[in-house]
Length: 539
Image (tube, rainbow, N blue to C red; front, side):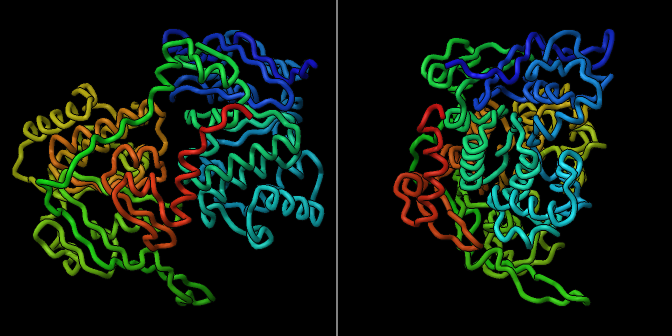
């Protein structure tokens, strides 16, 4: 029986700018989606995936972005030439979109009720009690617990998984025929990721809608998609049904993507290593205030009695869901937030030292943050960003000496001195992460806290960063505390693993033991979510 064709894109071209400054972002993409089908669009950052998706809903910033050629046919309706009234009727009603980053896509000044209800008011005319009933129904549909209590909440008061569920509720409000999901699980914990994917799959089956899934995570694609289109440099280089494409990829780029899983650490013993950092019974409590005068009502134990030892040339991986205390632990070990407990760094007891007393040790303990775009100043050049630490900790160096050291460390992370006078926005995500690593390395630290350094990177770029971190560790005997929710990356980098939940370590031990023979039920759930996600090709 023939399927009903829902969307047909033919020879789509997208360009930014005009004349000699024109950049061709998409060059002749053709895609089709049938009713009830899940189609995946995969490729690295900059390949044109999101630009293609935004073109469907005509959300690109015109006239700066324009279509030199192409056709987008939705049920016989030409969206490329559709007027504003037609597009308003389609957007959020017949075609909806889940954007990549819910924290920036949700309005921080509006409550969840107002944001979900906006689409219902516009397209269905629902207000008041009827609108609230539908909003509650949607929040319960996407698995928001105690939905009635969440209506007045603001985005910052929700976890990453909850915000993503709210985005899905908004997109589903008017029961669209086509749902576009742009990286819907990027930066989510593996268990939350599994829940979101199960939710999308269940909703697709229940509502009979089509799904265009845009992602760089091939494990998700293998589990969810019926058909796959592979994009690079603005064009589709291969497409096929999911089983055939994974079994026999034809294009070299597809083969490269499928092979881009981070390589695992070689087996190595503990001989020759020394303890760089030792911490015992680390406790961090955050006050929860309330009432008219903001009195402290109770405390949240973000870290509750944690022991950890990190050795030179070795990596301790810290895994767990959002809110488990992973980042808090890293900040406490670096003495960037107050904590209780014993901390020894190299030969110094540091848990009772003041900020000024710690300054001399700061260059030996550094951190690489999760989001390099947010942690690198947009107003400073790469030279200024990386040399900043040298100015503080090595004030005797002249400008030429600093520039020479910055150039050397850039080369060490795989970049050249042409980057020195450029700014963060001029680089890709992977390049920005290399710059963030260079900023930490220029001071020649002994201990690095790596807080989700690969969470938002494409698979192939992720593999490159993991290889870089492995090489740097081998070269300089660096000690890493590697914080991540991506267990495949943790497996590739870690010698030992701590599994955290609700501020406590529920399981710890050698990496292979924790991954292959987990004891605690929560650890088993994490491993199942991370490593079983790609076991069933197709829908």
